Picture 1 (cartoon, helix red, strand yellow):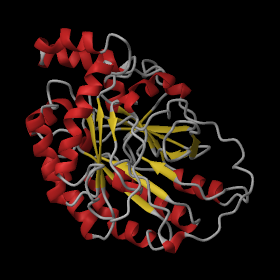
Picture 2 (tube, one colour):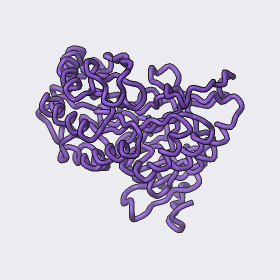
Picture 3 (cartoon, helix red, strand yellow):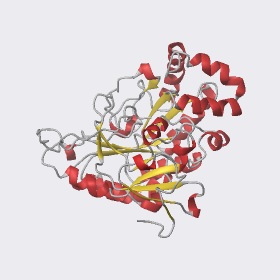
Length: 381
C-alpha cells in the first residue's frame, strides 16, 4: 500500500517470530523516515472492539494501530504484543501493526441494522495519532465513518498530529458528540525525553490544547501517569495544572502510575538505569500488585484535590466551561482523581451527549453481532 519497493518478506528464514500469527498480514515495510521501525500492513477483518463492563464511559473502541512509536516506558498496552509473539519491550516500540483498511471495515460494521449508535473511543490502547498516522492517514476515514453513521466519538492522544484533523473534527461535532482528550503528565521536558522519547514536546501538547479550544471543541487532559517521587510533588502538580488552565483545558483527570505484569519489568529496568535510588521504594510501593499502595493513593488524593480546586478543575470549584456540572464518581481503587463535568471535560475524552442538538431518540435494537474483542482493551491507560 505504501513505500513501494521497501517490502520485507515475512516468510524469509530468520524473520521476526510471530509474523505468521499476525492475522491478515499483507507485507512488512521499512523506510528511512522511521529508522529502526518496521510497519506490518494488515487487512483487518473487524474494526470495532467490544469492551463492556470496564467501568469506563464507553463499550466500543477502534484501534488503527498495534504497537506505538511513542515508546513510553510505562505504557499499559505493552503486553498486547505478546499475543503476536512479539515482546513488550523494543518490539512494541518498533514493530507496528497497521490496519490499512480499518475505515472501510468500520463503515460496514456501522451500517449494520443492529448498530445502536453507541459511543466509540479511539486512543484506548495505542495512540491513533502516533507518527505513523502522518504517513498512513487512517484517522480521517475513521472520523468520517463514525460521523456519517451518527456515532458519537472520542479521541485520547499524545499526538500533536491531531491538529491536522481539527477542521474535520469540528465538522463532525456538528453532527455527533465529539470528545477530545490530551494526555500530558510530565511537565519536565528532560524527563519526557528519557521516559517518553517518541512523544511530542510538552510545549507542543500545550499548544495542541489551545488549538482544540480555539476550534470550539472541549479539551480534557489526562495527567497520567503521575510518577511517585518524580512528578508528584505539590509544586510540580501546581505548575502543571496552572499551565493546563492557561492553555484552556476544560477538565483534568489525574491517574497514579499503575504497573501491570510485563509493563512493570520494562519500567523497572528503566528506573534501575535512570533512578536507581528509587528502585527499592517502587518495589515496596507496588509490592501488592498493579496499583500503588492504598496509603500512597489516599495521600495523593488529599494532595491533588486542593490543587485541582485552585486551578478551576476540582469538585468544589465552578467548572471552567460549564456552570452546571455533574461530578464523576472517583475511581479511588486506581488512584484516579476525577473532576466534575461531562464529556472530554473530565480528561478522558468522552463526548458530552447532553447537548440539545443530540437529544433525539436512539434506536433500541439488538447489539452489534459478536465482534471478537481485543482481550487487552480493559483499561484506558
